[in-house]
Image (cartoon, rainbow over all chains, first blue to last red; front, side):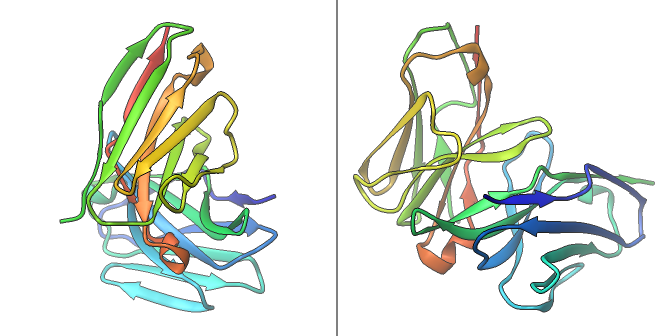
Amino acid sequence: GQSLEQPSEVTAVEGAIVQINCTYQTSGFYGLSWYQQHDGGAPTFLSYNALDGLEETGRFSSFLSRSDSYGYLLLQELQMKDSASYFCAVRDLNSGYSTLTFGKGTMLLVSP
Amino acid sequence: DVKVTQSSRYLVKRTGEKVFLECVQDMDHENMFWYRQDPGLGLRLIYFSYDVKMKEKGDIPEGYSVSREKKERFSLILESASTNQTSMYLCASSPPGQGTHEQYFGPGTRLTVT
């Protein structure tokens, strides 16, 4: 089976940098995705890492180390609107078809 | 602009009722997914479909069934609703294979079973 671990809650102040970690155990691994979900909203895709290293998209970056079964999402220059839940998700195979298995989510609270 | 729509934002049903949740996507995606989201449990995959009339069980299929008669539409059916099926239900779609990492979600249906 698959399991993902991420912190349940992280707090930070505006303008700061925050890192949300994700460790995973899975029988098959094809990549790690990150999603953002505002309260009452739908999850939206942020980034994806299939290979080791850092992917940067504006203020957000995502890192993957396949040998350590570990990844993180880095949010820079935090803004109040970044307060949301963040989910890591492993892309793996389910009955031979590609699916995502999600972590339980990290709630990020950004204060002034 | 890509879009996934769900038939209802809020739904209240009684125990034992048959419940249909509808999802429509306009991106011509092969893959469609149904998840339920509960506090502290994240998103859990109920069923998915990789093509018309095809379906596969996810991690928690018990008590649910699905139907995909057209490429753009994926329905989740609760044959006999129970109180433990009270939850937020999210539909998503994606391209096939490697495209699965980027899923597009609908706004969700909050179902309450009383």
